[in-house]
Amino acid sequence: MKKIGMKKTIIITALTIFTILLISLVSAGYYSVCLKQGEKIRFSKCNPYMKDYTCGEDKCQICVNEISEGVYCPGNSCGALGGKCSSLENATIDSSAPVMNITSPLDKGIYNSKSILIDIELDEIGDLYYLDNIYEEDRWIRLCNNCDIYNRKKSFKEGFNNITFKAVDVLGHESYKTRTFTIDSELPRIHKTEPRSGYADGNFEIQYSEDNVKRITLFYGNEETGFRSKTLTDCPSGEKQWCQFIVNLKDYDNQKIEYYFEVEDIAGSVKKSQIRQNLRVDTTFPVLNNPDSYYTQGVGIYSRYLYFTFNVTEKNLDKIFYSYLDSRNKTREAVLCSRLDKNNICETKKSFTNGNYLITIQIIDRAGNAISENFNVNVSY
Image (tube, rainbow, N blue to C red; front, side, top):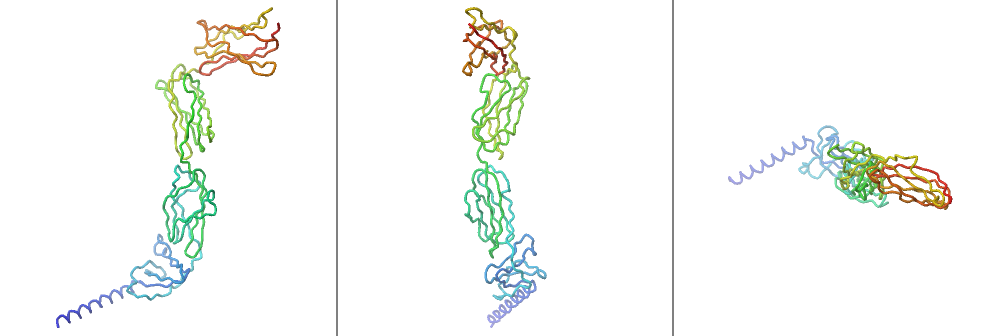
């Protein structure tokens, strides 16, 4: 008898608890609603960060919690209510396409890696695709199904990219957004820098390969006088391009300097050249001390010769040479001197055939500083 009484007590207690739960569920606003295809529950009214729910089938049943009139939150306690459901009052039909919020890639963005983060959020559940408008036209690639967020990396081609993203909701409504961006994942290449050794007069050159040059900077100087730099932003892009830098090295005259270049592309990648050291600076031009008497013409049987006497002030003479156009309009040139004696003098002679000549004399030092002189002469013998 005691056992039977205990069972009755347990059953009554369980029924009481169930009844209390049922009453609490009903009073809390939990119930199942029936939706037809296209009908939407705006959970965003419950919480602006929640996605609205749209029925994508002929009929949908979903548990909700009505926290106030017409404001529904997702529910998860409708099992005790059975399988019945009621229609949603004032149900709206989803007639709009998904709204895409694309955080990455940035439109007109520049990236130094081929692996780009795709970060897209939808305002409703849907499917996401992308189309490469340059390399894979008419081939839509699926990113995700039944999703409202996509946050993964995808690989794209080097250079300029044009990508269209498509979102499709459960009813087939489509929306599109296009992003263009540039990938520059390759470091610039440096082929040559000039001068390589010897002397520097302020003229520096670099040969490089880079499709998207942003800037090139020359760094030069020494510990004695200090280090300086010069940046150019108009150097050409492409394969094996040259860019010239002209700087004033007067403060470093007769000193030794070092230098190097840095090439930066639009993605921020930087390539540094080899450091060239121990270049002697010479910014002083040669001086011709006898500009009115550095040549004479022979007489008599020797009139085919021109005699040269150069008095030149220059510590680092490279050469003195002449050039002219012959009767066939072809340039002729030859070295007259490659060194000076202790009195800064160089003497020599050269023979010419009959004719009138406009002769150009050039005096150049080892750093490339040069001066020139012109004279006319008639050779007849």
